[in-house]
Length: 178
Image 1: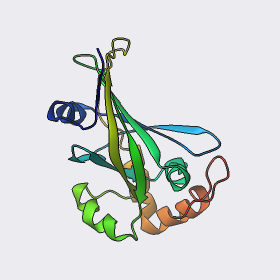
Image 2 (image 1 turned 120 degrees about the horizontal axis):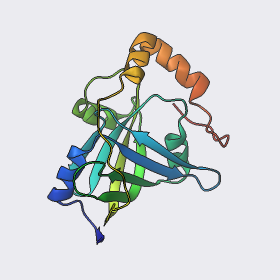
Image 3 (image 1 turned 180 degrees about the horizontal axis):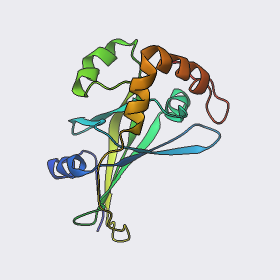
Image 4 (image 1 turned 90 degrees about the vertical axis):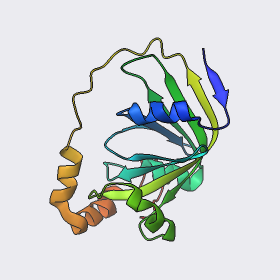
């Protein structure tokens, strides 16, 4: 059924490329575990042991708050169509902000979108597949454009104001540098 690997083989890279949604989990030393669904065109495989994803502006900023304290992260993909499969990537992550040198090296790997907040880089330590036999079938009908339209309408200044009012303190009261 399941396998454990220390790298991301080509077949699983193709599986990731076919998925429309993925889930990211982080946790600080104390407080709540955060689990977020992600979509849009925001995930890139850099190598067999490194992936990055573009974190867009949201209601909170838990991922960055958690990574500042504890850099463990799990990313999960599920097959909702085709052969059953669940894929988890476990590793150490860090947030790369727009004012950092690394940002300029990576941002061009993604389409230009308003509200890009961080690039999250994951160094993969463990790749695990499990059966996914209990995951139901779902039909993909398209992306929701609501977040992108909201960010476009706010503009860069409006986004930065939003970050200051909504994204600088986590649910557990941790301060977040933006």
